[in-house]
Length: 237
Image (tube, rainbow, N blue to C red; front, side, top):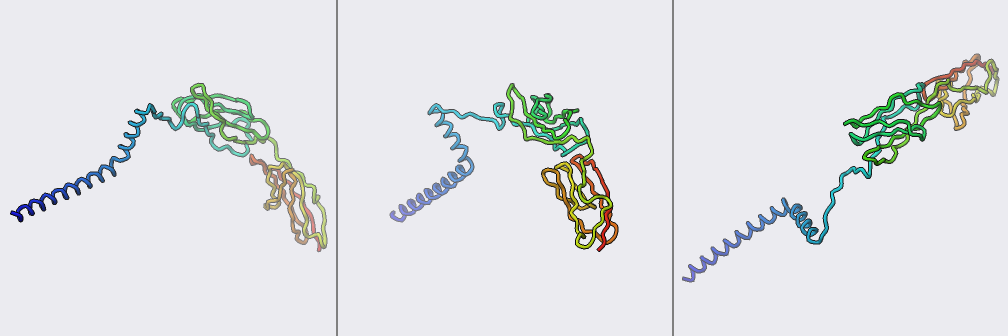
């Protein structure tokens, strides 16, 4: 009799052990797969009980418009009229272009984020362009500034030293070629780049060879236009 009761008790204990193990496995599975959802739902239930409600906000709202972006512009151009292209973060609304701090033109987006403004008339010299978005009677901040120079004239180039036909001897084998140009120009002396300061003064140390020396100085502006001058000097040791 005692042996039979012992076997029944042992069998009952094994069933409880198996049930406990299965229960633990089920709990772990539920927590790993549905825990975040249950927690979120429970949090929402608590918010409902306490009178709180969550507000879903979009990434871009009308109250916080993103300004459009312009495609890269060249540093300089010889054309007075240019096309300005860019892309907005929205497919509807309007894009307003400012040229040199004044509103220049407004274009409407028609189910496309890309836009183009043709025949933008530049002023002589440096121009600053920026754009902003207009949507649902709200205006975005301005984009970054985009700069482009309209240069219709040849770049300035004046050589103050040496003069054409000058002669040098003995210790004057190295001479400092000097002159002036526009500050944003590049100066090359016989294809070597010279130093240009913020006032447009340039200089280049040039080593003379015995006899006749030809020196070619070329100024290039941001639009790629050039002015060239050539002079000849002589050196006798």
